[in-house]
Length: 175
Ligand code: 5GP
Image (tube, rainbow, N blue to C red; front, top):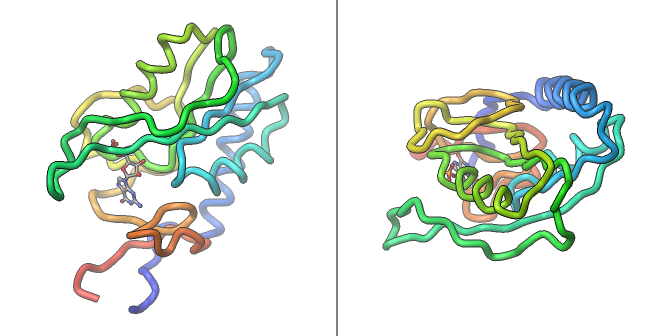
């Protein structure tokens, strides 16, 4: 199978991640610490790059969710499969996602983490499929808006393949 077609180059990702890290560092400059909650598996590379560019004290946590499926149709319901390991009560939480598609996953995570009384909660996603939104979620930090197509690379997969591609690519279903 040919390599996925480039949608966002490695250089463009790097530049945008630097901008996001600078903005986040500025916004949280007066806070004691920020808790970055990476959503597995897709966000692991984005989180690694973003967290290393922050100039503020940070603590890293991970969470994992899975979508309920009926046959091959996603129902929109989300299930927690791995929780954070430290209490987030009174903490400034930033959820770090790879991609927001319908919005169900992020909506679920915001609700769930909010119920644990953090000092604040914001969201950061590398990619957003703006026209696929089914539930409105507030995205505080966005890397790139993209069209409604399946993307891979920089942590994102297609059937566990292509996660380690250095760029964001598009799978052509005809390949
Ligand atoms: P949502 O709940 O917003 O519909 O979906 C979010 C999740 O769906 C993402 O965290 C990701 O796991 C998966 N997803 C949605 N679109 C894509 C895509 O184009 N590529 C990949 N690799 N995953 C996607």
